Length: 353
Image 1 (cartoon, rainbow, N blue to C red):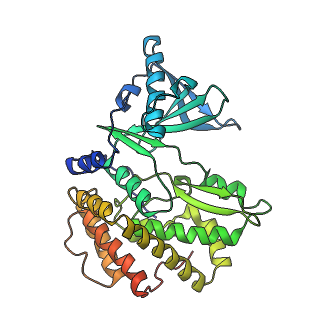
Image 2: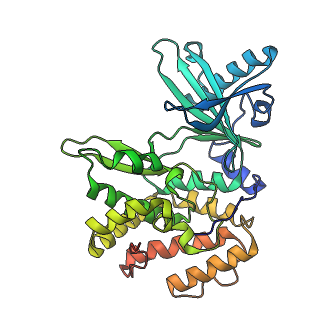
Image 3: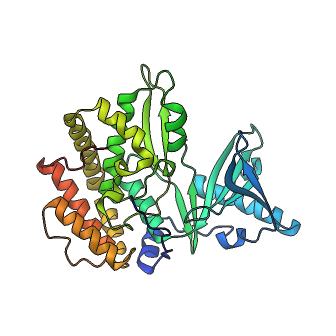
């Protein structure tokens, strides 16, 4: 599948900023993304097998190092405890890593609790409107809650825990106790969530698998970690993880263990849950989509191409002549919810290799 080489950066516009402030996502932060770029030294970070992770650990001039480390602990408090600083004395910034791979070029901050040596991560990135819309829609319409904050052009995100999808496929699925059918069911649901929200580029390294031991068998939850390609690409299949070659192995055992009736059932279950979440958060979703319609968030040719694909998929002309991806998503989301309410789903995203 052909993907765009590099998605352009879309800054936070006035209407989105208004939404973020209203819902307490925009707060003053103790350090900015731009300030973190002023490091003077960096060394590569290798994994336990000696492979380059594409991250580099960075250091700052002595007069900045302590100031930045304190600021990063305060940002962690803003993210985790709404700015309550009563615990910051037991926290320290252990490491600051920077990644030059991908769209967002994030900083990964490792915070350590000095009392018990427990550690946690969070990320600081240059704020991008597409990513923020993806984070907020995931928070509102998926089973996952997302912690993030913005301050002008800086975006701070909680770490999403789980086994990276590519690592999971290469190392985990052959382990004793792996519940293939349960993982297949979850991937169908994940596939449906991504398509309903038009979240693209869900190749295996852009999501994680959260594994939860149950009393008789493991449970799995697939969670996206990359939201940059929300409503950017111009083809319907870009928003269906099943069509990426990086996910072929999981698609093969989905086809092996699930019947078409199973797939239809799990898709309907997930859309039903999305409908319930939408009904619960309808006002916020509509506010978000209204702000999203103020900017294109993609090129005119991609908007026209996706609109054509979705007209064919939904057997309508409602997507014709739309000018923004926000308008496309609003109609698509409505029609996906209607399919569940009317139970007329045609199964056109059934799994095929």
